[in-house]
Image 1 (tube, chains in turn cyan, red):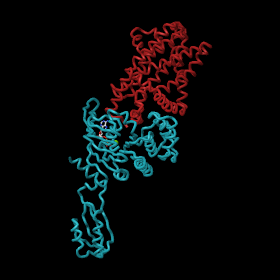
Image 2 (cartoon, chains in turn green, cyan):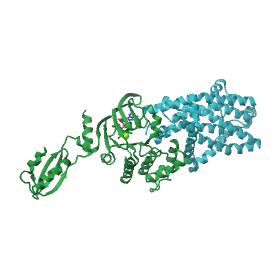
Image 3 (cartoon, chains in turn orange, yellow):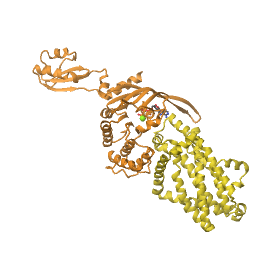
Image 4 (tube, chains in turn cyan, blue):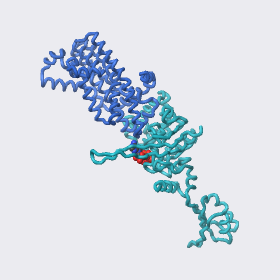
Amino acid sequence: MGDVIVADNLVKRFTTKKRVGLFRSYSEIVEALRGVSFRVRDKEIVGLLGPNGAGKTTTIKILSTLLLPDSGSATVYGYDVVREAQKVRKVIGIMLSVEKGFYGRLTGRENLIYFGSLYGMEKQELEKRVDFLLELVGLKELGGSDRLYEEYSLGMKARLALARALLKDPPVLLLDEPTLGLDPPSARRIRGLVRELASSEGKAVLYTSHNMFEVELVCDRVVLINKGVIVADGTPDELKSMLPNIRTLELHLKKVPEGLVDEIRSFGLEVREPLQTPEGLYVLKVLARKPEEVVDDILRAAVSRGVDVVRLKIEEPTLEDVFVYFTDRGVKD
Amino acid sequence: MSTLLIEVLKIKNLFRLVRAEMLLVYADFFRRKIVMITYLAWPYMTTTFMLMIGYAVGSPQAFAERVGVEPALFLIVGSYLLFSSMSVVDDIMWRPIFDESVGTLPYIISSPAGVVLHYLSIPIPRFVLSLVLGLTTLFPVLVVLRGLSGVLIGLIVMFISVVSVATFVPLATALGLGLYVAGGENWRAINFLRPLLLILVGVYYPRWLMSLPLYIVSSLIPPAHCVEVVQRIVVGLAEASTITVSLVLALFLGLAYSPGMLRATRAWELRKLREGVKT
Ligand SMILES: Nc1ncnc2c1ncn2[C@@H]1O[C@H](COP(=O)(O)OP(=O)(O)OP(=O)(O)O)[C@@H](O)[C@H]1O
Ligand SMILES: [Mg+2]
């Protein structure tokens, strides 16, 4: 199976009412999605990254068969999300909210049993699975399995929500901001589990977030969405390389020998005139799109001339730079 | 109609759903003692109040002359039937609002079982509870008032309450979800439907003494016929033929409203999918 999730030109408009006083109101159309297309392949974790109101939840809901698109289409595991919703429902595990979605007067275990029954699982298999999952997400070690959901901390609620998504051991996971508001240990546990599930069990995961740091940690590929449009799609590295600003390689040298600058320039790189630091070191700045590809050549050129490289620094653009670059551009459009 | 049959044939799924619903309802019931106590005391309380009001404005003899039976018996049986039927309306009308507010609705709608089957399963646990309530309410009172024959009456009343609830679910679902589709979810809709049904079902007043227009409207509500049967039995006006006709009418109405239930459920689901199930 190649593409597990295919979204093709999804469009969704919501009609909302603007209220003016008690009696007057007029309709307003919100374009939540304006032609969203992307793919998620087998065993792949794709991060759907975007600012508030970008359309992440709307996309997840359409793929979860909880919202009908106005136009465009999407398939999950080969099934159409509108025409074959029932089949889609059998192959997805969903997590739509960290802080709600369970019955407060049932324990974590009972909640899982409840939803497992809804999903048509047999009693014995279900009980075993629930026990396994409570252990897996770390609710057992937190002593949460048999406590009422209404007494749960946010971290415990999130873990239970992930456990529910895994009840049927589905090949596809759709997770909407699964670590929103969690403390580092809980967030780490969830991220670790998601990575583990993709690599060892081959699950395909769509993971929304507006946390760049997290997406870079978890996802193989990032789809950037802004104002209902996909503005970029690629691995974190690919996205960074799409930035026009060239990165800087900074070399700190004891001296700058004859010919070194010329040789580096001969690689087709731009080199700034060396500067001297108070400690008597020379700083050579080389501008490159991909410094890591030329760093070997530069070091060899320096060493062959008998200079010690005291320090070497590459200024990396972050995914945040990518995010800001693409979402700002979206605003200007 | 045939689609309803298909749904009902998924009996194994239904069984699973009912078990899940029982877990949900009983956890609350048994863990909160106060819920349990008020529940069991409710019919006694209503009957007491009704009797107190009754004694204040008239005499029990007047009631007995008019209706043909002592008021305590009439009212306790009525309260019981009302309670079992109303809890069905409450369950069905309340759950969509509740599930939406606690965020469980998306997981229910996206479960392969389907919403129709889910709605069939929702009232069952509470109805089973109401049978227990029958044991604690009906039998003590009936035995005190009627001796051993009270046990028989109690059994008949309980059997008829099963028919009443079963035939009521389609109408209650069609009305409840239909109202939500037309006007958006609002828990006040419950307050609107409840007293209306309460009057029409004719629990506190014998149906055969209703005015004609009221009688006709109430004839469209399945439990009204069941209530009438029970009232006739209690009063001693029962004939095998009238009982049969009433029960057959109730069953017929239950079936007749089933397509409406299916349509309302589908329309409600579609509405949710159009505007997006809230998370
Ligand atoms: N049911 C609805 N009715 C009206 N407008 C809606 C509805 N659901 C979403 N929207 C609007 O659609 C747009 C996209 O919302 P969506 O929830 O998909 O954003 P998001 O990317 O998930 O944002 P966040 O990071 O805040 O969760 C927003 O402008 C939102 O106000
Ligand atoms: Mg969102």
